[in-house]
Amino acid sequence: MTASQSMSALNDLQAQNHAVIILASGLSQRLGQAKQLLKKEGELLICYMTKLALVTQPEATIIVLPEGNSLIVSAITELSTQHAIIHTVTNPTPKTGMAHSLYLGVEALSRLVSVDSCDNLLINRVLIMGVDQVLLDKEHLQALLAGSQRVVASSYSSLSNLSNKQDLDEKIATNTSNKDIVGLPLVIDHELLNKWQALLTGDKGLRHLIRGLPANQISRVNNQQLSYDIDTPYQLAHARAQRWIDS
Image (cartoon, rainbow, N blue to C red; front, side, top):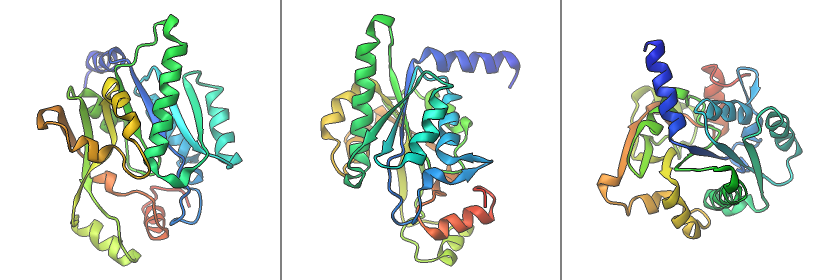
């Protein structure tokens, strides 16, 4: 890509007036430690992923945090002092599921848009992402934002329900899965997200709502690397062995 093409792509992203919602309030119960505080390239994972989101030049970034973890809050507070567009919201009941975290993120974004309406803060689209897809990169986020449909979602294979590290290694080696996932990170029309907010309860997140859209309103960006998240000790061990996560 030439310098002029890079600048054009950046201008296209900026013209979209998008916001980012980062869902980072999970309790990591299966992992046994806060995945937000794992390190990648010397940075806490939550900070690494937030900085990755900032590369897309959003108008605002909302981070949903779990209540009661001062280390996570402290890390993001330090980062937000460097970037005024970072805003946080606390999820007091993270056990209720990811959908509730997203509900809180949408609510926080709506308040921000309302407060800043006099400053002409306009949000057309929202990039929604988590913090544990350790091979996520800026090129994938830019590909999602380059789509024009109401929903542009990531597509990848599932590596869940694995009983041990050997099963994980076999799945990765053969790149096979019993199902494909269409999910995060994704970009969604802001108006549509606001419309769906009231339907976000418990673990009933965006997936079942997206399935109800006409096919011509959805597109997918395939990236098998997004299969490698950090939900279990076996997945963490593999990520460390591959040096995707710091030891």
